[in-house]
Image (tube, rainbow, N blue to C red; front, side, top):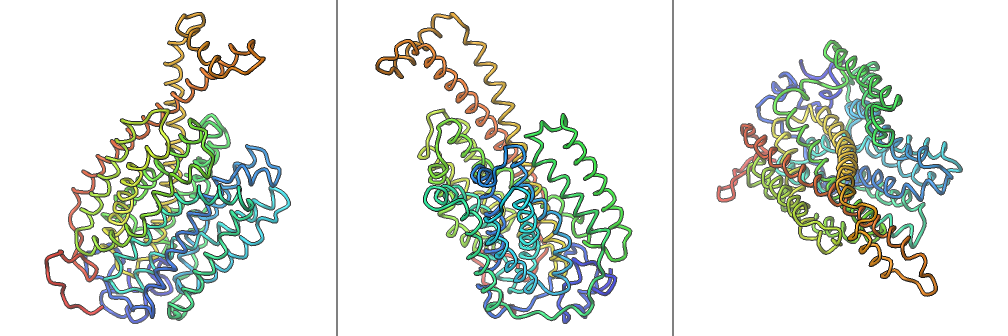
Length: 560
């Protein structure tokens, strides 16, 4: 493929005009080991990185808050459990749908302009959404808000690569990774605090200041980009096939656990239609002279492995962001604000860890940085798996949670930066679309797997425990009497047996859930250990201006 032109893919058409005339830009837009083209620096790079942080932070935080506060939101619009389950799905499905359109618009108008308009639109939607009079209106707002926030992730990485000096890319990637830990783990505290002290409406209104900060950072910190004169043609069929295909599969994954997976005709229909549209999408993109996304960027080694690792990391992140709250709420009966006190200790050190990860990427091989992160995750999961009991509270989770926070930040930063070292800025938009897809699908597959796995293993454990609890058994009767006496009420001696049976049922249920969560942590630890082998077998990235400089070596004097 030649330099970006009217028939070039959107993912490759966003290169600066000056770079397009160089021989390197005329090379095929694959993951070639050639030296990346140095992009122009922004006026205030740190303001640009702040905007990147705001975009990724908003996208993840809003989705997570909508999920945690789902019960309050359902009650406000008088929605039942089943129909209210689509509230969070509507937003993320829209993000999947708009991904390809986002990179095409970014290729034409530049990331600065598109991100500013998307952030402003998202702020307006967040302002109006709490006034929804019914579920249907709320779903429309959620969908439209997802369309706006769907621009943030695909365009942020391309913004880092094209608007900051190569030596700052490591820190930009670390900032990008920062949002996952912070936004996922502060959301429980925010949701609990909003509902206890303010109103459920602030679940949406808290997006407004973040979006305005993002707009201000982009406006004052980044120079305007000229409209691309060689604007890529719109790949309408690619947008429809790819966007709808990914969106339908995501909806099936999000609703699968509630609808019992393949026993539901709705889930089967969504999966069948989604995979059919994706098949048409890939065939169309390979044959189309102006594809929506350059598939060679996605399938050229080592990109498939890197995207798989990003998806897997989203699964491991859920071991703290999903499984720990499930244990504390189901087994210990903690409220959202109390769960947030535990997860806040994971988010609190992330700012320091972020810059430490960026510094390490500048001084060490990103493969080793990722391996260190995955090893920390493995050890943290084993700490929980071999120590968890139904009596655990916030303090017991703290050591493993902090270790996992360090591991996830280093693992994600190292994995993405290793992939970035194989890229040129011209294909950054296609790379951003691939990362967005891997991020959302990895998170959803991880969420579906963890929820289903914990539920099934909990049922197996409950069955095994139940086999040892027989009606009329002397030890069972003695335990029920002890529970009844411990919960005795003055003037109500006749209900002691009923209370004892209820307490025993709760104990068995809590023990079964605990065993299911232990099994989940063991599986994640084993998969993480295998991932280390997966990474170390990769060859080093080609040298370039963003490559690491050994800590004891003299820094080469290269222009930024």
